[in-house]
Image 1 (tube, one colour):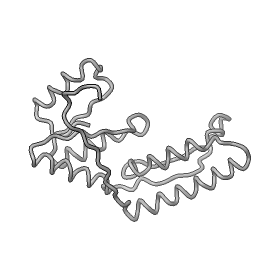
Image 2: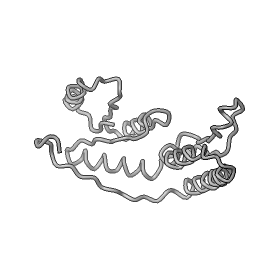
Image 3: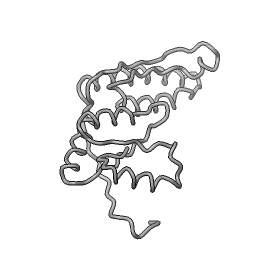
Length: 169
């Protein structure tokens, strides 16, 4: 909408099933969180709603390498943190990571580069995990971080392309 010289852009949604191990861990996390949220809401507290949402949105992205621990925010404020739910780090490669690897390899084989957009980059950062997987698969990968000033990003990206990157996260 802003620049008419931009190339065509397309978004596709690829639905992938969780592995059985991830689905089991996710269901246990969801059950524990739902129970705690219902109890909190019944007592008039909405303090767990954000934790519930974030944990269930984020766990599937980091489950291979990071345990999910949800603390009661009220207990943290009172100085006695209480864990209300956990889910284990599962190890291995998640189905969505396998799909990303396949897409990036297919695109490289077609002579194209790939831009991977990642939503969670602060406390639940998955960029380094993705870079490691892509590098291990033989793809030259780099991460654009906030340390690159916005006004320098175009030049920085052009340099990465000149150096032959396959994937920019």
